[in-house]
Image (cartoon, rainbow, N blue to C red; front, side, top):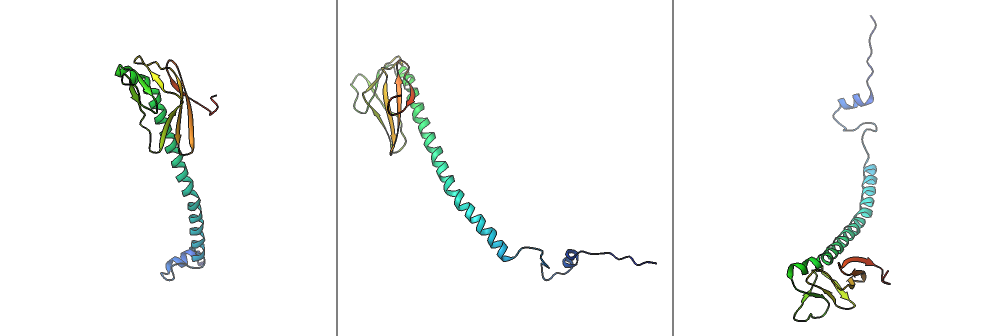
Length: 156
């Protein structure tokens, strides 16, 4: 009767032993693990600042949309109040409401001339500049609806 021989791999023979935990190349060396950690740290170092800039960009876009929404809603606000209003940096006459926007921190609104909104919701039109630090956005308010339309600084 022929003897059957069962071949076992090095892994099987190694797994039967309890010590040392790895045998002949199974597993990773300390140097390999350190290289992987350095690569992961480098990639993280590149990704984190970009994520911060992206979040700041989203925040700025959201704040601009909120200001534009407030400009679009001014005619409705005047119709609901039943009084005329003035969008201006200065004071409004006693018979009119001085219109203000709820601007985010460090933002400002500038008008070349006061923009009158009638109690009907119509307005006389004008140009508004919204500023934040060194950034400026110019908007044209065209009568009678005065929907804000962003233009460049030259008025186009």
